[in-house]
Length: 123
Image (cartoon, rainbow, N blue to C red; front, side):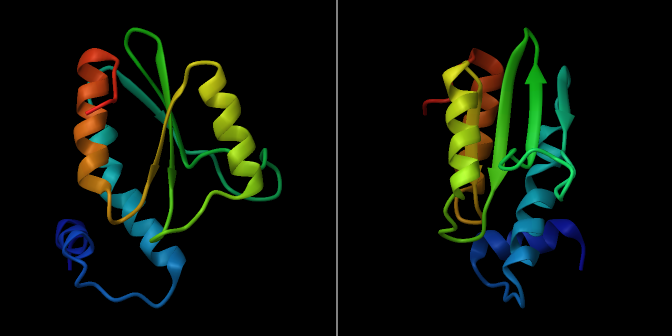
């Protein structure tokens, strides 16, 4: 099964999973190609013991110098305490932050396209 079909199953809610991490990985794989727009820089910090705790899954920038961050979650997964701290810090300095799960991928895509075009993520 290719990535597009897996993503469609996620969006339809017909895919079953063995682990929450598998769903989060699917969300990342589904949105990553959407982030590959012209004039967008993207970085995925490596999770683990050597990085800063709570950093979102994606950090990026778009012309002209606007930064964004995306944290992916499974279902109704909540931000950890460290993630809340980091998201608050990022938003305080003007970074656009999204929390994306398998249920709001399409909303994220629309908001991201609008943000790229206008600098405003409000639908």
